Image 1 (spheres, helix red, strand yellow):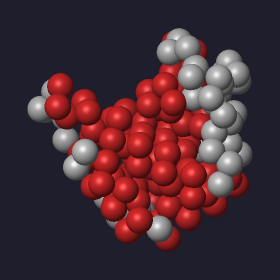
Image 2: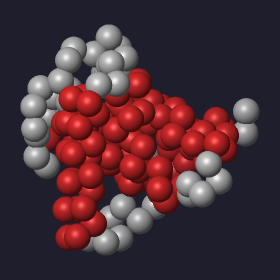
Image 3: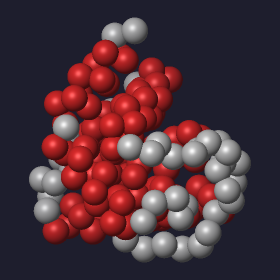
Image 4: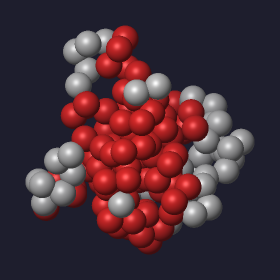
Length: 140
């Protein structure tokens, strides 16, 4: 993961537990999935690209070029590097989104690389729970 520059301070603090992160990732995924309603050309496999925008939104940051660039560059660079090494690692849309969402926080200096790794490991270990939360949210 590469980090470009420090962004502004968030108005909404990141979650403090892995369980809370999992819940937020589900909510963030559903927020991104709303784009599929607006633009039927967007598929679930494309949602990872929206993760930096949702990250900025959920942290209450001003959607400035600076913050979006920091989050997007880090997330997409990390995504390309990871899928280049292991194409199957992020083949599920919800896991690709989770990875880009977490690495966006790293790009904004809100998480460390170790925290991203730990949270992503937790997310993979609790993938079934994440899927259930997404389905439950989508059914509302």
